[in-house]
Image (cartoon, rainbow, N blue to C red; front, side, top):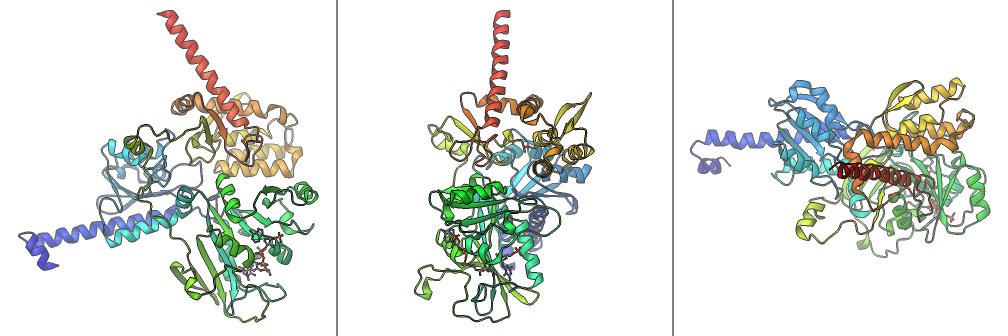
Length: 591
Ligand SMILES: NC(=O)C1=CN([C@@H]2O[C@H](COP(=O)(O)OP(=O)(O)OC[C@H]3O[C@@H](n4cnc5c(N)ncnc54)[C@H](OP(=O)(O)O)[C@@H]3O)[C@@H](O)[C@H]2O)C=CC1
Ligand SMILES: Nc1c(N[C@@H]2O[C@H](COP(=O)(O)O)[C@@H](O)[C@H]2O)[nH]c(=O)[nH]c1=O
């Protein structure tokens, strides 16, 4: 290399320094990007899975001036938190982001924070995977004169490629959501050295060690849901809780065609965490009624296969699913192509048993050459067990294979990304996500003879369930919801209190809830002009909250929902349009 550097320039010292400087530059960028990727996962297990954003702000001398990460969907962006932490050291600094900011709903908080703080350069690990977001924030930062480098696009090197891979991994669920329209699924099992997941009697407690099972609790805490099959319910009577005392607890899902399930089961206790049973359409209606009476949600499918079930939970906004089923369902899930990663805890014990179940049932493979090879395999000792994990499907490399809307328009102006005149919205990271009650738009609402600020519409709506009730516990609920750290936590408190202690809820709640919601929406869209503009831009389209399970505020799976949230937004929109046409009329009259 020295020879090469000599040939390229007069003084090898300067050139080597340049070369080294270039290499150091890459090494510095890579280390801060990896730090941002690590930071972005800090809330894993505490909140339900969401796009992971981390931001590190480094001074020109390479010192960390400030850091931040997105805590939960609907809370302050990582970039804004890092800018707050760095203070005046932002000026002329470099900001390292594991992923392009999700600014899209006219909500430029993240980009504005970096621009207003005087950040000079931004290094981005990966572009945003969602098509309607990809490239927006990068373009906006560049339009404000910030130098923006995207790993893998502007410069290449091994050290940067490794850093970029970290950014792909921490958002694998979001990337899979963007590319395959199913959540990211991880199959986990504990297995004896002789390849069994239970004794021939079906008994399986315990194969792996306490330490390994603690890791499993962590995996559950990082998931939207945990799935088991009917046999596992009958055999183990599992709880499938994360057992970490606080933080996020995943929904439990049982897949059962027959509904030949016990009347008594731990999973039917939904006081702390919900359970959903996915079954064949029309199965055992009486048992479905029994489950509903226990508060267990039943979802019917024409074909109860893992792909149909996963596409449904994709619609519900799930990003990460943990499969803790037995081999029968695991084989079906692998064959359906919905399993992306496998995690196996191998215990140094032998159980034997020619009929003892194995981790994966029938896949129809008869030659070893047909075996599915894992990718990026990792080995880790966990107590006495060996943890082997790897990918059945690589995390798609997201160099923009799907052009953004602007790029699409440049290619073919006649392509209208949204053919139908129905606009669906649901999770805040999806298009029109700012219409969601979980979007991070604080509102100031009248409260008694005063005003109070609420972090989101959801905070305000949930708190109002308990307003005006002469019970100190109701006042506690209001305060607990008002101070909840995220809309998701506010909803969790409000819904569980309403379910467990209905006496705390105001008696007229069913009569007033629509009005309460409307007032909150009116305040939100009046407070944020860009949201009002966005709402008006949907004129002529039907707005539907695409929640497949909330049949009051949402549209339901096959449109059977009442879609009150969509209706109220359309009502508000026509009120604004009425105002603007009235004001236009006044103007025209005035002319
Ligand atoms: N060591 C470990 O990590 C684990 C061990 N186990 C053990 O494994 C054993 C259970 O394994 P296994 O018998 O394979 O049971 P599964 O957990 O795989 O459940 C199979 C059942 O799932 C339901 N099902 C729904 N849809 C499908 C589908 N598309 N394809 C296949 N099944 C579907 C059916 O329920 P239905 O019959 O109700 O219609 C089927 O009988 C138990 O002994 C348990 O202790 C289980 C999980 C993890
Ligand atoms: N036997 C076995 C596992 N079994 C899995 O854990 C479930 C029980 O979890 P819980 O209800 O939370 O206690 C059980 O139904 C099956 O899915 N898991 C493991 O990590 N190691 C083990 O040895």
